[in-house]
Amino acid sequence: MKIGIIGLPQSGKTTLCNALTGADQPVGKMLGGGRVAVTSATVSVPDERVDWLASLYKPAKTTHAQVTFLDIGGVQGAKSSFSGPLLNALAQTDAFLHVVRSFANDLVPHPLLSIDAARDVQALDDELLLNDLLVVERRLEKLGDERRKGAGRDKAEIEREHELFTRLLNMLNNGEALRTLALSAEEERTLSGFGLLTRKPLLVVLNTGDDAGPSDGKLPAGLAASHRVVALQCKLEMEIAQLAPEEAVLFLAEYGLQAPSLQRVIRMCYDLLGRQAFFTVGEDEVRAWTINKDASAPQASGAIHSDLEAGFIRAEVMAYADLHQHGSEAAVKTAGKWRLEGREYTVQDGDILQVRFSPPSKK
Ligand SMILES: Nc1nc2c(ncn2[C@@H]2O[C@H](COP(=O)(O)OP(=O)(O)O)[C@@H](O)[C@H]2O)c(=O)[nH]1
Ligand SMILES: [Mg+2]
Image (tube, rainbow, N blue to C red; front, side, top):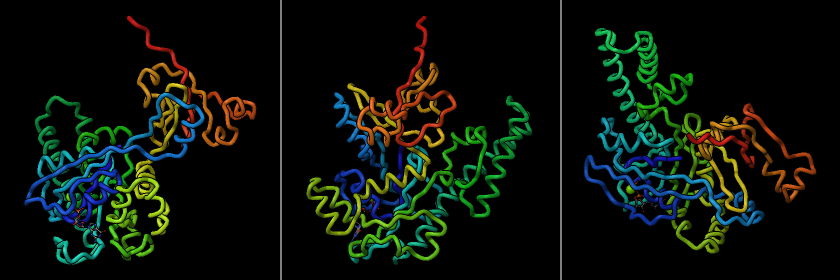
């Protein structure tokens, strides 16, 4: 999972990225006009269930799920067309965290000179939308050419694509982001190579500043209705992320924060992207895997290895909650909670899977 952190200059993107990953990238760095800077950091997804499973199986290796955060500097909110490098960076993400400044700090100039979160959200929404519009218009032009020349491709396919891109154009011209559009699997495949930015899920991170308190209740009117929003004190969270774990616990309590931002933000990203976790266990390794919420047992197996998906026979399944309650695999079986599931089974969050499959025949 790759999450892009975007926002106006000096909104706190690097601060948030440090908070989420424990990195120590310099904050307050200004980029010269038109420059793009991308820093990435990968973190393990905190999950108490993995820790508990590791304490039960005592495996040689424990592997948490991984999330990569990309701190993407260079978006200006100025209704400009993005440069190639910036588009590349944005296109490779699965979702965006849009950091919006709400903290007061006289030493940090706001590029638009005043603090106005709703305006800043709109500025970036508009800019993402404009860049999608450019992509869609360019594609429609190309499709128009193909139509006239009757070139190479199947005619019906060109017409289907033309109809799809016209639908996108109409939405964008109405100022609507593309993420709410329901598409067939085939249409989804057609669009997958275009890196459309407003199709990606987006979570607004309101950077509330130092004495705002952790309340999510102080969101600007209207914003919470149109966007998913989380309020964070990014600078404070960054400082906590850089503490030793024992100290961090004391700090969190003192500021009335329930959990470090990483846990809260990752949970929201999973939700935003419709992802969930399943586990594999054993003496060698206890491991968490990230899959889509509607993944079938073979699809989930494919996350482990394509051979497991291709040769899938059945999956042995225990729910984490059952194992946690009964304390051992044997006790789960005795309780009648151990299951053998087939191809049609939809994997649930927290399932522990053991895949039975026939290995590919060697030639
Ligand atoms: N007072 C205060 N300053 C902050 C907060 N978040 C970020 N800053 C400051 O704002 C400046 C810009 O932050 P940075 O993370 O570099 O922003 P970026 O340009 O979006 O990456 C830095 O000087 C930060 O220390 C905050 O919550 N409170
Ligand atoms: Mg930065």
